[in-house]
Amino acid sequence: MAGALGAQALGAERTRQREETAWGRQVSWRQQEWQKQRQDELRKVKGQLYLDVVEFIHNQQISLDDAIERFETGGGPRGHDPIPDLQHRARLEARLTLYGDEPIQTAWHRVQHAQKLLYEEYEREAAGDFSPDTVTEMRAAIVALRQAARKELLELPA
Image (cartoon, rainbow, N blue to C red; front, side, top):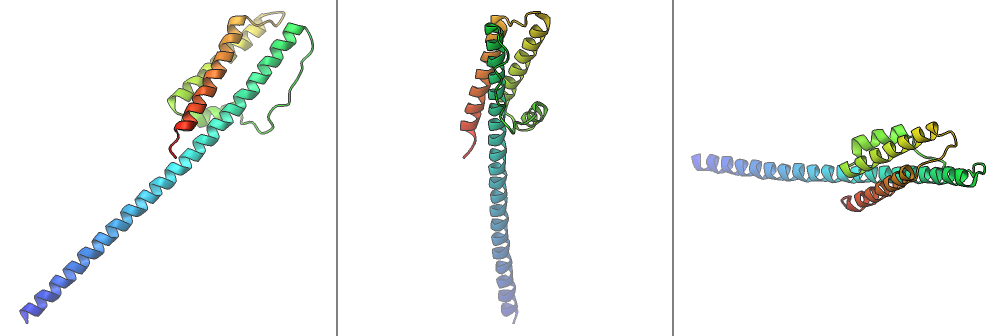
């Protein structure tokens, strides 16, 4: 009788171990799935952010080119149609702070600094002329931001 009870206890113990092992596998699998979903969502958020930044900066470049052309030709503003659903600068900056990687944040701040210098120079100059150095820095900052965004997009995990 003791042998039968022992065999029954041993069988119950093995069943418990199998169930624990199966449960552990299931928990591990769910954690991996959750992590994968989280990475996919982060990739989508970052991809959209970088696209929004590039659209915003493209609009800035068009405005810069328009202003320079206006002052070089002495004519009125050529004007351009802004991209209709651009994100606001403050919103982009907040999203970059949360999700942006270091290179794109640095490039963004470089553009913002160059733009500030450009506006300050515009305010100081009676004729509204821009110095070639300031314009060159603004254009270089825009190119650097585009390159950083492109690089970060290509490096997002698949």
